[in-house]
Length: 232
Image 1 (cartoon, rainbow, N blue to C red):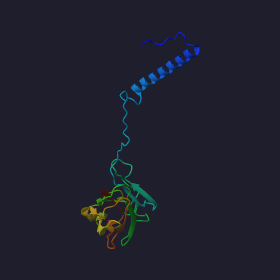
Image 2: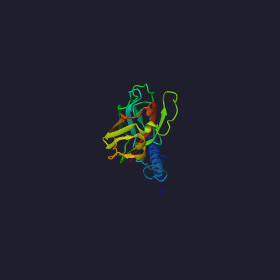
Image 3: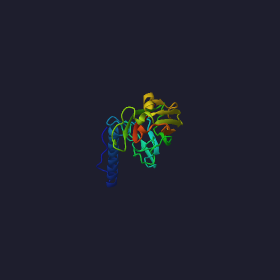
């Protein structure tokens, strides 16, 4: 079949035919583009989105202690902020003296006692099922007189005479008044209910010097470390 002759076309007919051919070309080009890149084919690109990538840290226990410093002002120590989750608290003195000389206000005479209250709180996200108090060895040194700075001889050591009693509420512990050397030998002590996240235990330490203490134990300062530990 032969193509229709365009020799006798009027100018308007030529313009219309040219416009039609142009429009057909545009449509054909669009179809080709879609076939390669558009909705008619997705082979040239692939997209996969992971929209739920999560990670989490395990729970931990954190131990915070609140109590008076050597001047009687409230202070706080915490294990938080350390990778090992441990801390040394030198500001809270549960024996009430702060290492002052015999002339200090808290120096004990025979028959005297002094009490200090501290609060232990688990500020971590995990519940502690274990809670212990471990006393360290007791040491003594003369704080006045010609022997100042010296260690007492065997038989003169105030650690064998000075007594401490411990009573805790919130996580039960009761230790009857006992010499500091015996306290260390019998440790560690278990606080029976652990310490849940956010829970606190309040402990009272009462240090006493028996009325019958001989004079050869005078003028001494005793030091004993106390270590608290909670665990999941």
